[in-house]
Length: 390
Image (cartoon, rainbow, N blue to C red; front, side, top):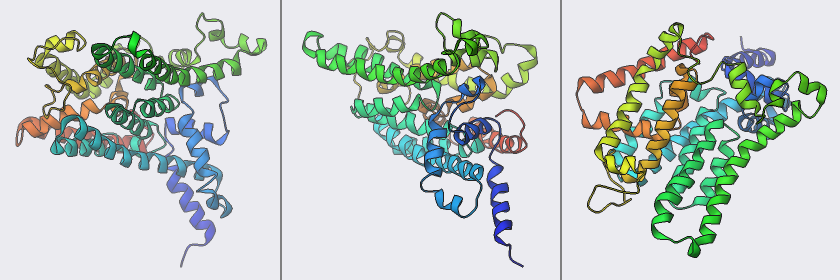
């Protein structure tokens, strides 16, 4: 006997609702309510909920007309956005790696490692990691091809998706100014270029700050409401900073407790791989690394593509970004989300891919691949049952 329409709708809702876990609950609530209702929701940025609502009101609107409930349609929107973003992000990582390394094998292996991420349901569910990775890789690709305005607009939108999008201003300040422009141009002859750099940087910062201004106007514009929000009276009233500390206990070394040792052990392979990769790059050319690229111990320094990870000067700024991200996560975040936080950092995939290529049929290769797969399987089981880490 076939299922009637009500049975099919119920089956669809149950199936799609299996993706609503942990952070997905908050993103779905923001999209459903067309905005923010509580302070703690401001830890979740509006980019993904906005796209979910837009997709539900356009391409997926026929489902609403067929009787599918609005929450299920919004959840489907989030799942589609994450999965499509993940596929395109893998393609952009391949193109970016080809551009920087001129190495098809490294590009392919890096993309496969991204696709086989040890957090598969996070990348497929109503989370921001896939979308943010797409924006990260795309922005960096356009930046490396000298399309700075395109990358600045992409990264500006990324700050509406995740707060760490503001880190991308470092590419303009460091790579475009300190390394490239400062070497070849004078300030007097290139005021237009320097002005463009400033505007591109401000564009990214303004996107983040505009969300904080919206939060301030929501909770602090009314004196009665402000009394219930102590952060309104801070010298720099940033709700995001307050929410992370007050509701999620995030702050410098706040997670360094004996009770959190299992979470540190869980994240330790990615911590080790990250610092190992950074150290290998630094040791290959310490002069370049510790002088911010202003000096190079090679005879004829060049930003041309190199097939070797440690010898490639074009990825110096990305190595610095990797160092900032892994150190910040280790000292100031819930350390068990380390891999989620690093999914948008291409240097992690470049280094692991090079290890796999340079150590064929080795114990190291087997250990990395085994951990990569086993972590993924375990994370699926835990996520599906609403268990940490997520």
